[in-house]
Image (cartoon, rainbow, N blue to C red; front, side):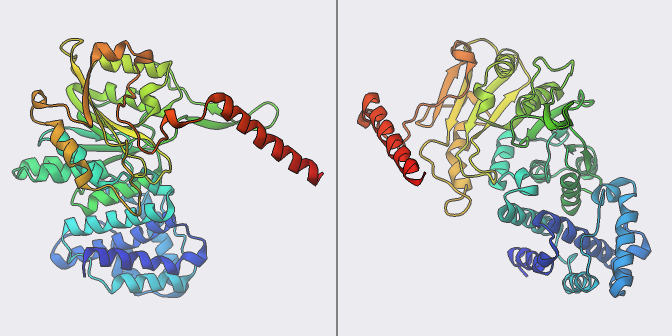
Length: 470
């Protein structure tokens, strides 16, 4: 069976759970727990050892029925969630939300009808990623909000060129897209046995604040052959990073402000802004993306490289934003900004960029920041015209990953000196120059006086209609 067909088949299992009030995001978790048990059980058939305790293995559970199956499966999840190592991480906080024994049994039967270990590691991982992508498409929320288009991730990784022996981190790892793409890229460098083992166990690190998402990431990596993933559950911004990394690849979650709900003196629930107090931060703000940028600047080794997906506001916001941009321009080598097209993320209306920088001081104020505008006059969506590698082809050519000195300006690719940017209002990095064909020609617009008269007329009409109702 082809990869896409299996993804569709697994996703269709969701119809069994729809009437139980199980959300799509919950469904991904529920089906993942079951699939993982089945795949682990099949390991023994090919001479490998399963990490699941014998009484909770697939064959034992699948032999049960009714309330007996429901109770045994609940006990299995409870036990596995308390284990150490990768099993405890994968099943962290796992709860069975399939309350009807007959539906649970039907899922066991459907999953049991397929041999999953017959598929190679890459295909199994791809199927799992397909399931996550399907969830993101269906929900546009939940795990979907963490989903970065794979074609964009792979393009960024090709340009960043991670090498065997590097320490690579994603401090907002979501379901592991960047880490897995970097892993696949480095595997192609034909590491020897020791290098491959180190790549699988010591080279990749991720963290996510959401328990379920971190568990999905660990499972995703495990299914790609990374059997001891260094994935942590927690807030990367909460404290100074303990480790330093050679490369950071990340797309911090969208949403401008950090806040917690607190009970005020008048008994009302209010949002209280979270401002992280860290001695390695040089600006205090509740803006999550600006704080993630500061965190990344802090955890990079000297000479380290970063590629970060950031919303537009980080490029132009005043106050802390301006302070962080000036630090980035003066003390780091900010060499490239990719203005992303709208319509490529599941979170609606997001205007974002990929910011590329190295932790080295620029040689002088004449050093260049190159901007590639992939947004203006690009009409992409998640349905009719999705982002493809063809859309990113020219940018990858312009980037000249091996030698920046070979860069040349094109219609969509321009350079600006650091001194020039520092002189801009608030050191604004939201730079564009192409004419947007979707906007009306300003010269063709009516004069402000005529526009005001039109607004006044429309308001008077609306008021007369309201008075007629009264």
